[in-house]
Image (cartoon, rainbow, N blue to C red; front, side, top):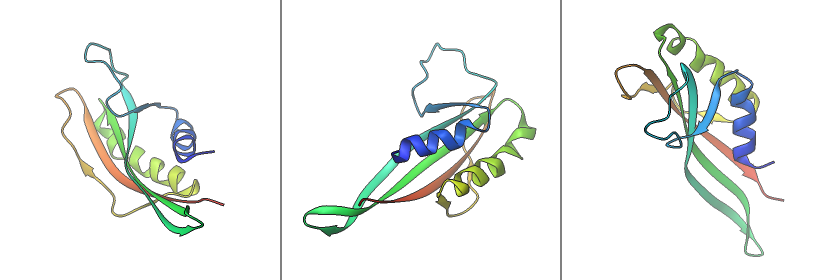
Length: 116
């Protein structure tokens, strides 16, 4: 299973729609609450025989909701699920602007994949 599959499986278990950041069309109706993700970096290191033994990923995960009460609770649930799936984070995240109808919270997560 690759990092994207691991991430999506961990997020989908929360019961919200999960999509690649930017994949909704401008005229597409959005769910009341949803999660997006974007892999922003992927770096290989620790090479042997010209093959990377370790790959590091930085992934932005954003929770969007029309309900401010969910912004206060769901990010902790996201963290628990991703931690259990092997992800780490630095910090608890931040508000990000989206549109007048939604509240949003973004956290950067890190994942290390060992390539055997």
